Image 1 (cartoon, rainbow, N blue to C red):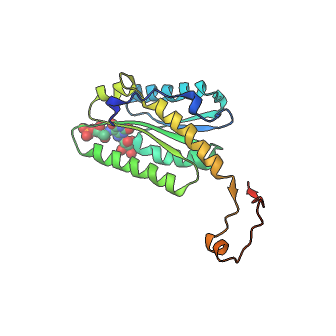
Image 2 (cartoon, rainbow, N blue to C red):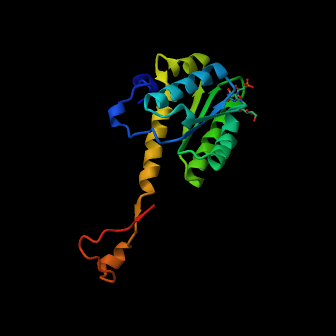
Image 3 (cartoon, rainbow, N blue to C red):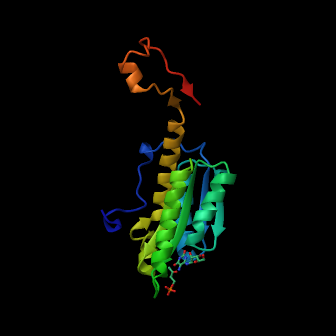
Length: 191
Ligand SMILES: Nc1c(NC[C@H](O)[C@H](O)[C@H](O)CO)[nH]c(=O)[nH]c1=O
Ligand SMILES: CC(=O)[C@@H](O)COP(=O)(O)O
């Protein structure tokens, strides 16, 4: 489904976990700032609409989308946050630079999700024209910043739940009888 068939700002609060105790980092690119400011507002409004205290939203600016990678890395390394949103807007120019910036920031943010324990949400518009960016940052197609904030809430919750792990008992030890679990024996929750 393309964005033209999905309004980026639509979400059902009743399906979301409580976000009031989460802290969120938001790294914002200054390139195309009329667009990135609109994306940030969409994200901020969605956080506030879901009872995230304003004090729990930490914002840093970086020069361009390529610097979102380093900014997000330092944000998650130094700030106690439950998720980070990387906000940028890359618009096709006359050269292949667009391709390299988009690929670089995409791979860099993917790498942070693989290499760290904090979810980093990809809120980078990669558009052919300024109008496409306007349409996706509070225009006719909604606001990708809103979408990113909802994703951040959901991923922070997944991370929280995943930390409540049970002692893992290798299946083969159970099936082989090497370990007998008395029925109803509670597995200790690892915090
Ligand atoms: N052309 C755009 C850029 N280019 C700048 C790079 O992101 C980077 O800041 C520079 O190469 C120095 O490392 N950035 C955007 O965010 N959007 C663009 O359209
Ligand atoms: C994405 C970019 O870096 C691009 O907007 C720069 O413009 P140009 O390709 O004309 O140098």
